[in-house]
Image 1 (cartoon, helix red, strand yellow):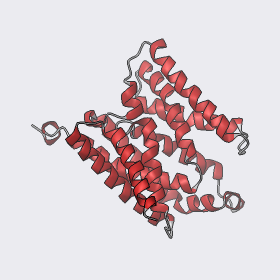
Image 2: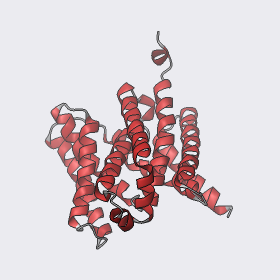
Image 3: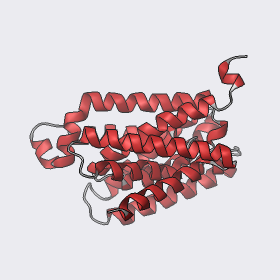
Length: 261
């Protein structure tokens, strides 16, 4: 019997490892770009795409990424790329997208475990879930290798970056696509709703007095990895769901660190 078959925890543990590194690093970039709120929008917008993909017999992650990215682009178009009522439009779109996704499930006659999609079900993760995680990790790595300096410039001064010839729209599109991919890949670990905790909390801890984005990302990933591994271990010991437990540990970590200051 192979290692994967004899040790049921192997795949969940590997997913926990990569998700614990990937989400905080992604969250650090989004925080510096003041786009972390967009994660909520994308996470709520992936459900209609997931439902349609399942109905069409396509990989659900493809539908989820397209649907999540479409939701983000829809908000940008309705606000004319300005900040006017951005939050109100975003909340309207994310609520409508989530409602549409819930309605499509019975209308299309498909079966989707909503609880697993929204809150994760790490302990039954399979090779497909691991593949999505590794693809998202690879895409984020490529984005950092090819666009690190541009991301820093855009994060600090988007207008100046555009004046210096950087295609800000294309870079934001690549960032949005990667974000959607990270959210969908984290579906098995923490779910598309609770992923916001793993994206934001370690990023807040890592950014504190960080001299550079690279240092902040490294710190955030270390925090995220520790939180994820502890959550995974406690979930097995206490027979609890890892996703909600990891999100609670994120809050506890933030409260603990901030209370010492």
